[in-house]
Length: 77
Image 1 (cartoon, rainbow, N blue to C red):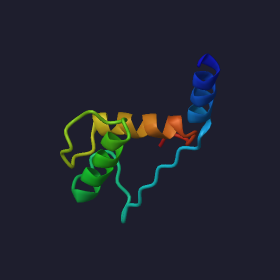
Image 2: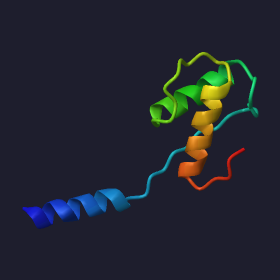
Image 3: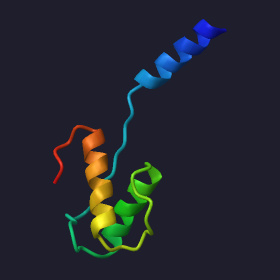
């Protein structure tokens, strides 16, 4: 049983993870609107954002974006 569990954990941890989102315009600090809501929902669904999905891009959203970028090896912007 232990070897099966170890093999299962190894396979689970090494499977590629793919996330995808498309936005029709650039958003950044102090942006507001539906695009920011979509971004916040995406970040919430993927475990990076815990704030309210308000449509306002300020410090909590900026921190969540930076965490997402860091976890995927993307230069933080």
